[in-house]
Image (cartoon, rainbow, N blue to C red; front, side):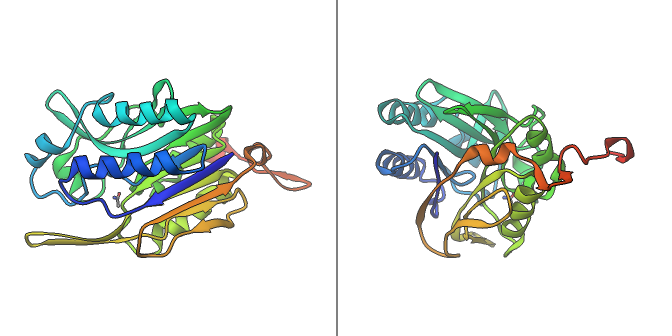
Length: 262
Ligand code: ACM
């Protein structure tokens, strides 16, 4: 299976432009599953909730319908983050889209910093779907700090976690996602954005360095901290079904849930 990420710097507010960019990369990539960053259609640095009225869209909606058309033409799958509108609520969402449409829909459960001012936290289960016979889970950015999220997906059989992100703390998410991959023995695609957003008095720098991680925590691909990057790796998802770390240790069989207080 060929999995990859497209790291770029979405332009704030330019939904049509960002969406066209995503569509054009998906149309040209030699890949089975391509992952794009968090809030990739809109940009990230909101300054007022009212801005979401312009930027957010329903799911399914224009972005998922466009991706579905490309997916159907090319037998590819795309995971992308976007702001969602549902009635008068806004969610920081991500979707998996394939030839038949939306296969997984996730509303970010752990909201980071000022996202709490603008978005409602998701309260649906962490989603799992099947892409070409492989079980794939979906998380968004700050979820990486909650090992329970990745573990929940892993215990349900996820072989790969895809992770649209707008990481701002240098090195942190790149480190934790390698650990999350290793402790669950699964593949991980972190699609982060790069660049600086400045809006009025607010400014954020994003850390790029998107990566594809193997079940032993090693890097299969890594983008630079700055610049657009399309990286693809050939993976054998069957490797993620084997949870053994030594002849006498199986990561899942060795768990002691009776001792855990969660
Ligand atoms: C983040 O959750 N965008 C840091």
